[in-house]
Length: 255
Image (cartoon, rainbow, N blue to C red):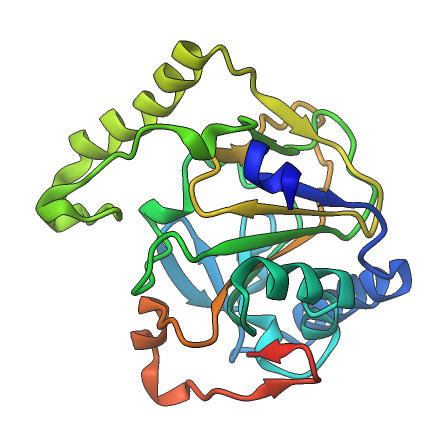
């Protein structure tokens, strides 16, 4: 918790069971083999049913935790759920998960710009390495202590960016501004190259992204969960609202 306060993130070595990480990867392979059309693939800001032609792209699989299986078990591993309960001082809610096979190459950003809740700062992410992560594979990068950046406020006083309201130029100014703030504070971008099962947890405003992929054909298997306290409502619940339901996941929190 002290490291979280000072640096905006915490690393929990070995929080994920390596066998469960392998089971998660095998589960994804099976989904691609059977082409489960109920699973959504996200490319950029667009979502598609599973299609083998999409797999070579830098895709994300959405919300594999919705079925009681390896994703839910991994994201509610006791070290993760206990830490989040201490952090939030109440039960955590897992409301979104993203599964990656390769690096995202996403620009450095803060989750508050895109992941919207009724209490923007009561948000945390858990990033689980599903394999040993090597340099050059699009590893996760972040600015330690960037959660202390001065807040960027979008139109109407909002913490989140909205294309229709704010436009792409404002989005670019926001992204460029993160690096400018890091330079002003003397912060250096760090790469996270963990072992399988290691977990990085970060706060709502930690500036992070996907590094460059310099090793052609490399993978960067990882699983990310977005959490908030159980009494906070994510805007994401308005998406496919008829398919949303709240349930207790084991004894550790809600999903």
